[in-house]
Length: 346
Image 1 (spheres, rainbow, N blue to C red):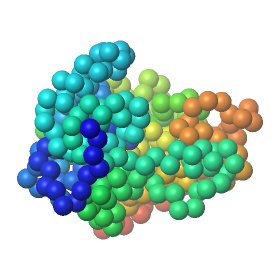
Image 2: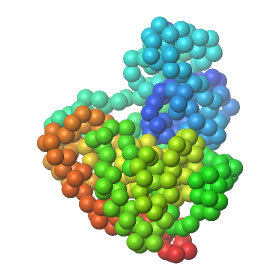
Image 3: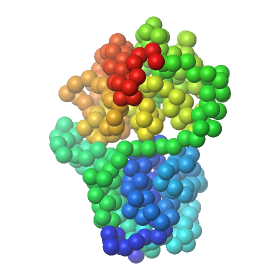
Image 4: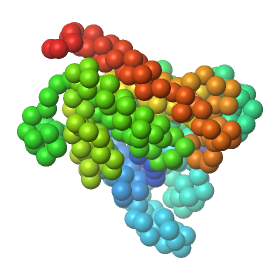
């Protein structure tokens, strides 16, 4: 039986549910911190697809990770079996930050109070289709955090996304990917995205990298593409990806999970937005996290970046020049230096 949660109860075993994806999981971390502040002595468990589990390792909330195996996602019967076994954990609160059919089944199977995220799907669809309804739409960090209001956790207490790395992980990344020494200033480039429509393009990233190098930046790039005079960051684990991003002085990438990782690690970042739009609630909002995109009537054309360009010419990406991105990146980098009391070259 599903029961709405109450702020007058101290929950001892809390199950947070967010299966995917990488960036969304990062953006749930303020909610994790809010739960820990409210319930300092409770055990907090986090159910997530096994490939994303490492992202929350060592998180300050002290959450315990429960991996959802691939077979439980691919087979409905196996999923029900998995949830029934999970229900034996005697949770007394489910925090549903996924809000889909599978998480609904999970809430039905587990005898516990619950809170759940409000996704505002119809409003976001109206923004994409008719460019209406954006006023007052909370960003995804606020949507996750507002799910906790029935517990007496107020939106005003929300912090920013956070991730945690050990010094050992940082040192290992320096040794494995940078030959034991990181040359500064370091720009980290991530040219990929889950959806091809959100990719700015290898040729534009290549030009951007040349501009960075011409202006005395050292550059490291993720992905399969090889760029001249850059440090390749290929075949990284999630934890290695995090550590490499943490070493950067600025991160530049498409609207994707690593962009949110940079924000959570406090690295100045510039997100390149095209078919998606900040009004949908996915843009970074932390200090030092900025975005760039063209002001076009057709934007946004997609909730998540899937599908095809409606005009057929990807104007939002094709007309965003490497020079414009470079100039904005320089500003982001300089503001980052000012925040920590440094000057260029230190």
